[in-house]
Image 1 (cartoon, rainbow, N blue to C red):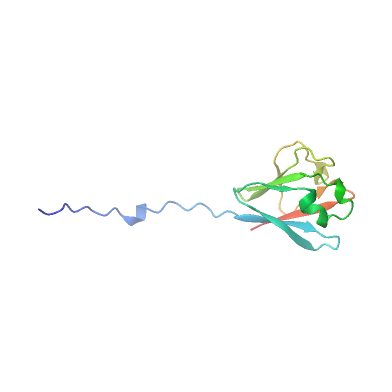
Image 2 (cartoon, rainbow, N blue to C red; image 1 turned 30 degrees about the vertical axis):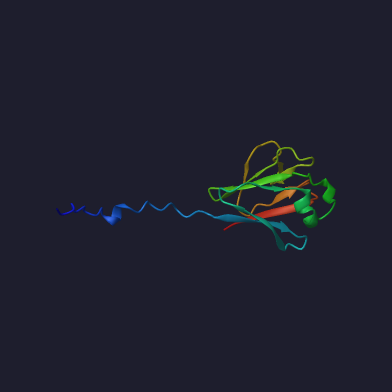
Length: 131
């Protein structure tokens, strides 16, 4: 009694097609008045959104940190793109001078600054670097 021989399935068919590598995380930087960047935190692709407010950002404020809401923005990374949401901060969040309050997840184009409170007299400026 010999055991039946099974023909091994060809290995070439086993590998699933690799998706195009996307970003794995983005670094959230606060801009200083002299233009230098300081890392605030990171947000992972497909991971939980990052909540930023007065507690996280007051040390990066150019002025009046009390104008930052306790929960000011939420940041997520999806498909290698950064999205920012402001569900109704007291003083608003601005991309290209447009207030994004209540507009849901708004994509931040690469290199664009996100300005908290006042686009002409910023309290915090954030930039994102997708890795």
